Length: 111
View 1 (tube, helix red, strand yellow):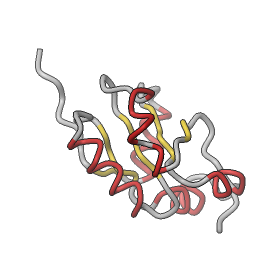
View 2 (cartoon, one colour):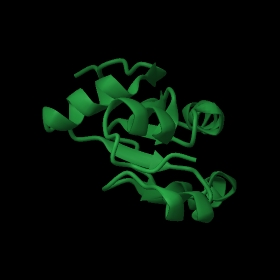
View 3 (spheres, helix red, strand yellow):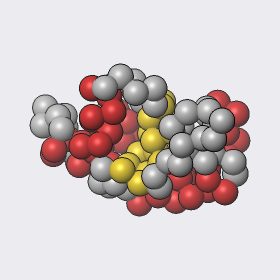
């Protein structure tokens, strides 16, 4: 059975649609602790960017792994690194938590 090709990047509207549809996906938040204390996405797994290489064993390789940060820059780097290291279903969240707060859940804090 062939695996479905995953996109390299999605926007917050698509991730929201995946959640509403009940799609089995893990969201990895690579922001720093202080950023997470300011605002967080419910259910996201938190591993700061610099810790991802040493904690790679905590991440699933068998399902979509959507990587997010504040605006999408750090998560884009982590997504590329994960894909180079066998995580073919790693996907960057364009716009990050900021776009999520602006477009999906305006009740969330922005910074």
